Image 1 (cartoon, rainbow, N blue to C red):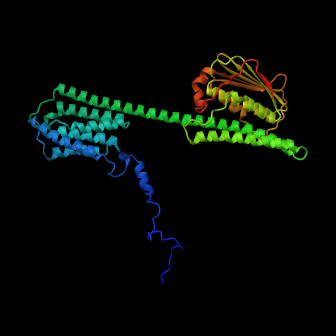
Image 2 (image 1 turned 90 degrees about the vertical axis):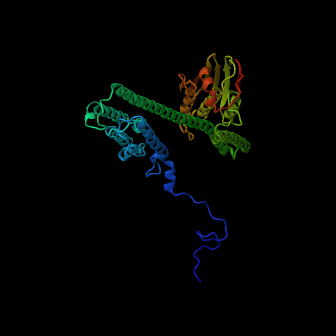
Image 3 (image 1 turned 180 degrees about the horizontal axis):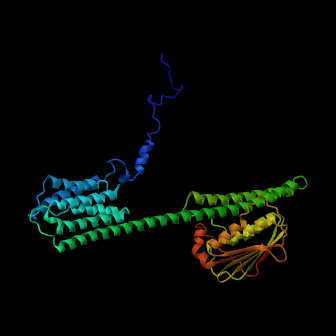
Length: 447
């Protein structure tokens, strides 16, 4: 019995065995590469412009025969004349691959055709198309040189060599015909240059659109990174503090340890929700998030979270809000206050902080103070907090100043103009809308 080389329960890969075949045939790598190459750049004869060239060849042959009937003084079209008429279109098959040799060969073919005394006609279309293609592909000097050589050769034939060239008894060419030929060549070059400029403009516009898309993608990626950093840094800092407290009080004060664990659960749940919202935006670009972006109306939540971490925060508001705060400004202000409080929890020995929100006619000012001193405790920090706050403010045309206070402690001041924020607010907020703050002068609370 022949040995079965297939595995038990599996058919041989080259036989169906009455079962459904495997995945469909995948084209080889060379075939996929062939499809990616433009038709005029493919090797061999498959990528040559056959249709347009055959149409041009037929037009040149028929048109030259009709033109010969109106020029009895010129040499009749014979086999050599027809061969020269076909040579130009044949060379034009390679006009996209080697445009420089093609334009010179077609110009030489037309010059030989005229020197042989054959009738004028559509033969000039071959050199016109070759020059047009050469200019469009960027070989302007070659096209100009070929047309200049053709016109110079025509001058030489029409005003000197005509004595020794057919047809017999032919006279010099009129200067009107020379001027018409020069105008025709100038028109070809002008049309070619116009198309070349148009193509360059389209290519430049495509490059600018691609650069703008890349720039927008980079800005969106940076915005998402800031969002994730702010959400995770704040929540993980609270979780870290509460976990340390819970471990320290687990044996001596179980009830307080339970409270710390409850705070950890709430902070982690909120962080997961905000991270999920950011990731949903990444997965479905263009769709509006299902939850509004946080804003200054959620300052009480920050105060409660800071209080759970052992930081008493006093919030104050000055001035009067002039209309609705743009969503981008509202989100940026919330994140700046959140990051500043997170830095106090992580790096400051102070257990109190002051937050002042000032509404002005042209913008929004934030000031976050802590009494210090710095503890040097990094708590796993990445060092990107201040940089992220500056990026948020700069994206809206604002500024951030952060540094030690003269009397000790640390201060963060942010100034965000509402005019610039109104133009960039929707983009900075990721297309979300959030409610504005309604605080007025005199609101104050300590938790």
